[in-house]
Image 1 (spheres, rainbow, N blue to C red):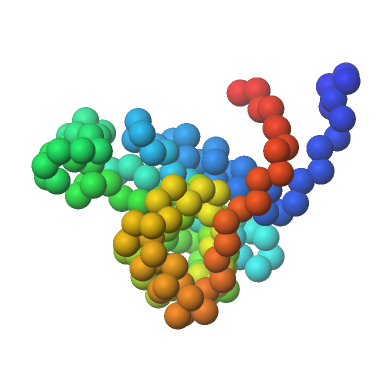
Image 2 (cartoon, one colour):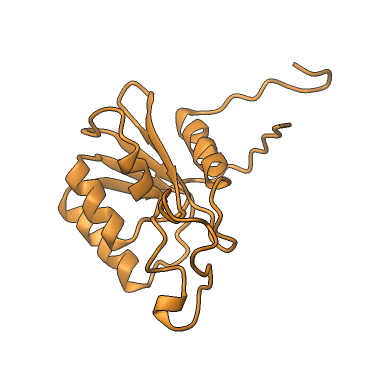
Amino acid sequence: MRKNQEKLEISWEEYFMGIALMVAQKSHDPSSKVGAVIVNEKNQIVATGYNDFPEQVKKDSFSWAREGEWLETKYPYVVHAEMNALANRTQSFTNCTLYVTLAPCNECAKNLVAAGIKEVCFYEDKYPDKREFVAAKRMLDKAKVKWHMYEKKGKKVEIEL
């Protein structure tokens, strides 16, 4: 521990959300960097993922634009962080918790439910009224998957890399 630095106690939720925020930094998306961490009941990380084009597609193959004709935007090509985390499976996701930096959309929610995720904690709910996110919450509710927004406590953690 450095001089004049007090010991920082963090909860498991803070720890895993911090990792999700760090994982998000791997994304090549210039406007929305999203990270996801899936954790089992023993607080062990089962998978991580971030939003990006599929691994086999060069990062400059398509536009990262958010607006314009749909085929000329990033939306038909980017794989969401949750889906990348599901693809990076190392063991069963039954009864696991997902920590993700952005509330899941309806497509991700369907796959999270099918994978057996029991709880979703998201850092930000950027589009709470958009139909994709309203539908996601309805899907999670019907499947009895607990979900909540992460409660920010204003703690600052400095990491020197």
